[in-house]
Length: 327
Image 1 (cartoon, one colour):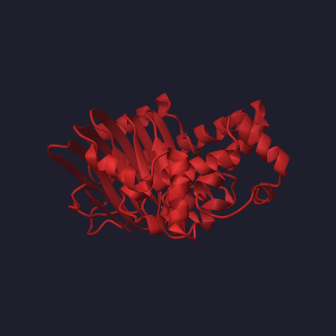
Image 2 (image 1 turned 90 degrees about the vertical axis):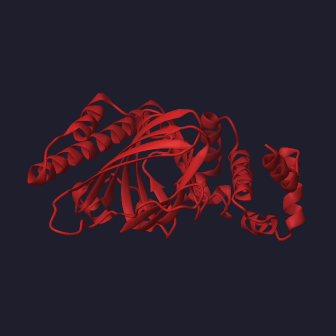
Image 3 (image 1 turned 120 degrees about the horizontal axis):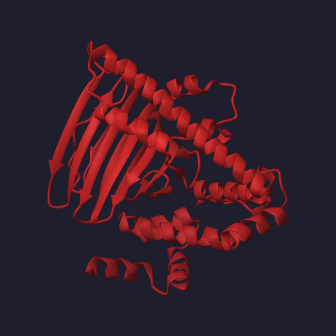
């Protein structure tokens, strides 16, 4: 399983082979630094047989992005210590906003991901990449931690534990700090990292599940609304009805509609429509043609899409692109 990283100019950085580690080393430690007119980056990487720990500090001087090309299946324990960024799948156009001081668990399956950084930020983040089978072994097969979506992903898709993540607590920060500052080597480093990654995973799952139970007790409709939101985000361009959503969630149309509007202050289809057209904007900026976007959006005639786009944004797709090029 490998990840390749490209910068905004299409240049490739050294390939990171996630699993397994080659040679006789128990742990491979890498410290990488590079800088240009757009950003300065420092990476600390520990590679093991079933896991990779990566700590990054990034100073962004301008807006920029990296493209990650991920081969195979990988679970990512995700911690944004400082700053914020946006991940967008090139394959499915799914997006995930990462806010400062939050953590989450993601599952990626053979996908390309653009990670966007805004200028004048100091970003600190930790990614822990785990072999999927190793992750499932850690948590056990008979558990209620994962929903059905985890096991039904197609290539290019991602599953996320909680859409908005959860706040990083002091125990997590302590473990991360201990890993970053360790001076251990050889077998002692391997044993230390294994124990700390188990601890970090335990703290994440504990935090995410505890908050989930609290929210269910406070307002059971909130979980329903979040489930609807998740379905929409993961099926932005699919064709299905309110009845389909209600059936999938074991509810009825009225409850589904009212729960979503109560918590998101917008109807399901208003939100869905906004999401679809905002994704259309992103596709335009990623060099999709109007005809290609129209097909993805379900329009048989590109002119009908352009008309709908103008109705939504008061500007045509071509005018929108020209305005961006002029900036």
